[in-house]
Every structure is written in C-alpha cells, then in structure tokens.
Length: 420
Image (tube, rainbow, N blue to C red):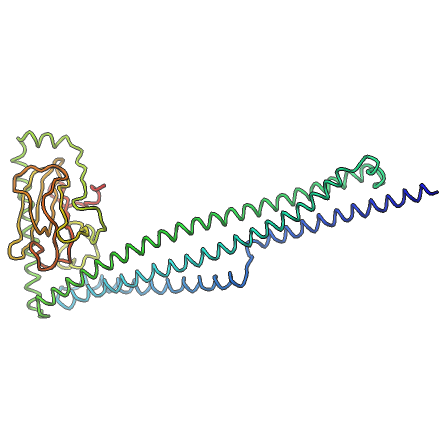
C-alpha cells in the first residue's frame, strides 16, 4: 500500500516537471517568434524622431534639386540667346547661383546620411540586447531539455503511460528546440545585415564629404570666373558697344589661333617626315601625361555649361592651375608654334607628336621653348597663366588655368580620352 502511494507521487511529480518544461520552452519560442517577426518594425521614440528628420532632409533635397534645375534651365536659355553684355552677366550669375544650391544640396545629403547612421547604430544596439536576452532564454530552455534527456529508464517508464507517449513528447521537444535555433539564426543574420548597412552608410558619408570638398573647390573656381566678369565690366565700363568690341576681339583671337594651328600642323608634319627622330616617335605608344599637375577640370571638352559657349565652342579642357604653374610637354614632339602674348593677346604653344596627335597649351604666361625645337615628354615648355589682364591671358579669360587641347589629324578631340 505504501509503495503504491510513493509510485503515485513520483508519477504526479514527473508530469508536473514535463508540463513545466514544455511551458518554458513554448514561452521562449513564442517570445523569440514575436521578436523576429517584429524586428524589422522595431522602433523607439528616438528612432521615430530620426525617421522624421530624415524625411525632412529628403524633402529639402528635393526642393533644392528643383531650384537648381530651374537655374540651369535659365542658364541654357541664356546661352541660346544672342550674346550681349546683360546676357553674358546673367550667364555668370546663373552658374554661380546653381553651384551654390548644388553645394547646399550636398550638405543636406551629408546631414541626412549622418542621421541614417545614427538610426542604424540605435537599431544595432537594440538588436544586440535582443540577442543577449534570447541567448539567456535559449540557455534556460536547453538546460531543461538536458534535464529531460538525462532521466533514467526507470523515470521514463514511471512518467509515461507507455513508451510511444514518451517518444512523442521527446520529438515535440526537439521540434521546439529546432525552432528556437532557427529564430536565433534569423536574429544573427539581421544583425549582420545592419552591420553591413552601417559600413555602407559610412562609405556613403565619406563619398559625400569628398563631393562637398569638390563642390567647394568648384565654387572657388566660379568666384574666379566672377572676377573675370568684374574684369569684363571694368573693360567695357558696362557699355554694350565696348562689350561687342571685346567680343569681336575674342572671336577673332580664337579663329586666328584655330586657323594657325591647322595650317602649321600640316607644314610641320611635312618637315618632320624625313627626320629620324620623328620616325622613332611613330613607334611610341602615343600615351599623354598631364601638362600641369593633375587637378580639377574647370571646363570640359565642348562643355554645355561653358560660360562663353554662345561666343565660341570650347575645343579643350581647362585644368585648374595657379598663375605661373610649370607646364610640361604631354608627349615628345616638335614645337610647331610658340606664340607670345604681346599687349595682352592670347599666348599658346603647339606641339606635334606621332600617331597623328598634336597638343595645344593656351593662356601661357611665359614660353621656354622655340619653334621647330624637339622636346621630350615631361620637358618644361613654359608657365601657365589665364589671370585676366596678365600677359598671354587673352580676351574673356575665366581666371588662372591651363587650356589644354588635343587634336587627332588636325581635328579637336576630348583630351580626357588620352590622359591617364
């Protein structure tokens, strides 16, 4: 009688233990499932505030882009109109205004990215707390599973009506454990994604900072162009007739230079055809080097935003270079023209190379070579210029820079396609 009573107590205790174990594991699984399904939408008041600020920045950026496009539309319209003093000044003003908005746009993008990085940091911190909590819950559940697995055969027989019922229970516990492990893996994957998002955002921020530096540098160039505008105002005394006279000089200057370069190239190549050095040049790769230290390009080949595009097409690139920067031969060849800039006229150097190439270096303030002289790649040929009113700058210059042309069989081509 006494032994039956003990057996009954053991059976009841066993059932209570199993019920408690199953309850704990089901609770852990439910909590993990709720955490995982809600992880993508998890939020805090601070994250909500960041989301609002990020959206505000997006709206501000959209508004800035619309304003910038309006200035560029007005710029294109002015460039298509007849060139007069008022129109030319409006072109300068629109370019500067558009660039100022562009810079503000980048600043807003940087601010938005910083907010996004802060948001991701908060989400990662929350995710780490969730993972720590879930590890603790899983540890408890696994401990209970271990206790269940360590029972003796006698306990197994005492706590179940038959062996099949026990096997069903163990299988059920295994399924629960598998679900817990899957949820934990999902949480880890989410955290890894957030970590990668943060890395991507950091890279994006660095690129935006670099873009901002470039735009600020471009703004400096525009201020130099604005100074060029001031020079035009001084020279014309805000007189339309004086401006048209200056414009005519600039057009003639460019036309004369283009005609001179075209005729000189043919004559120089005829002279060079029997020269042994030239035959050696023809075996060279034709790869060019930057004539001045590589820097930002202020104006591109046939640039649609070139401030004097309604006066003449831009057949070169303008490389930013301080007044008096050393100019070097982009490739080995012969000096076809070394035209000085007496009385403020446009000064330039032309070199003829192998493979049908020739190069032109404009707005030079001094010349260090003579015509028909052979020069090696990298050899000093002069100094840069371009500052309005200085020797060799010519009419309507936009500030100190290196005007660099590349011609193939006498026809201007994009220099950037030949530079490293």
